[in-house]
Amino acid sequence: MYEALIKAFRMNRIKVELFKTKSELLRYLDQNIIEGTPVGVGDSMTLEALNVYHLLREKGVNFLDKYNQQLIKSEKKQLYMDNFSADTFISGVNAITENGKIINLDGNGSRVAPIIYGPKKVFLIAGTNKIVKNEQEAIQRIKKVAAPLDAVRLGKNTPCTKLGYCIECKSADKICNYLTTIQGQFDEKRIELLIIEGAYGY
Ligand code: SF4
Image (cartoon, protein in one colour):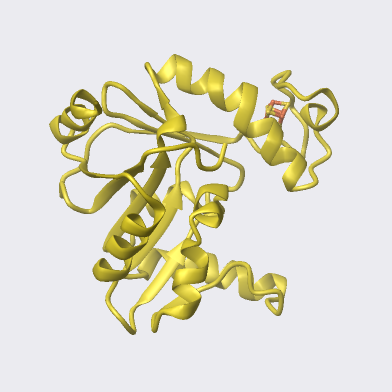
């Protein structure tokens, strides 16, 4: 069913695996992350829904846990810098396109920057609810669904948190600052896309 999608990513030199269940995906991650190594993560409702953060806390890795409540502001900033030299970085995505591209929109860049450069290995996880036709549809999806919901979750003072939709604001709290498209890579195994059947995150 997803053969054409998988082929499109492979044509763009992006390694891709398809999973039917959450437990299959977690087992794959568990087997492919080396014990004792540093692992960073991006902020992601998909990772939360799939219990990826829980896996990392239980596993014997050096989890760079951005959700640690004890972190003070300067420590969190340092953790974001440490993500660049992590062995592994794991994140969700905002959308994946039928022609093999990965689209993300970020507020401060701490998620998209280490996806693109730094960590030796990057796993990007997407439910099949994130599949869209092309980049235009991806941006529409992000602006209509993902960004307003994220702005609410993060308690931002932006128009979309009151209206429920995007009006392309210029607010200081705007979370739509860095729009990235991954459409290829030199090392075809560095960024690996893990697609899981079903709706995860938004
Ligand atoms: S541009 Fe502004 S209004 Fe639109 S989704 Fe982003 S934060 Fe909300």
